[in-house]
Amino acid sequence: MSDKLQVLILCTANSARSQMGEGLLRSLADDKIDVYSAGSKPSSVNPFAIKAMDARGIDITSHTSDSLTQYLNKEFDYVITVCDNAAETCPVFSGKSERIHWGFPDPAGVEGSDEDILASFISVRDGLEEKFTTWLTELN
Image 1 (cartoon, rainbow, N blue to C red):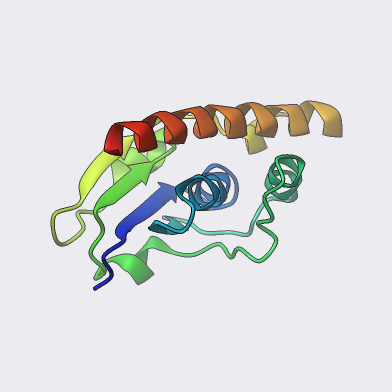
Image 2: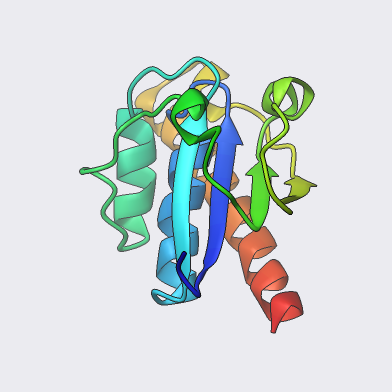
């Protein structure tokens, strides 16, 4: 087992919020935390999530949308849910994992122009970054 903290970020589709969270936490933790993301109903990484992260200088184009079932037997220090549905349906993970819930609205649910949709993704990205920055400060 790694000496690094093991963190899983969950959302329903593992397409937007959890993907951006994974990219942000990897960037902010500077390789001190092993970060994974998954969903209860995985789909694919949303192109607007990729654009919002690219605007922040973080490349998530190689990310995949993974099912949380592939992580059920892995021990995590923290399981962070970033949508209400994932918080309600999150299974119990083995080991000592601490659950954290930060509910964010689904930016993929926004309708309008591409600019409007991207703005919603950027808003969620910035909210996630604020949460992770505060959380990492508290961990130290």
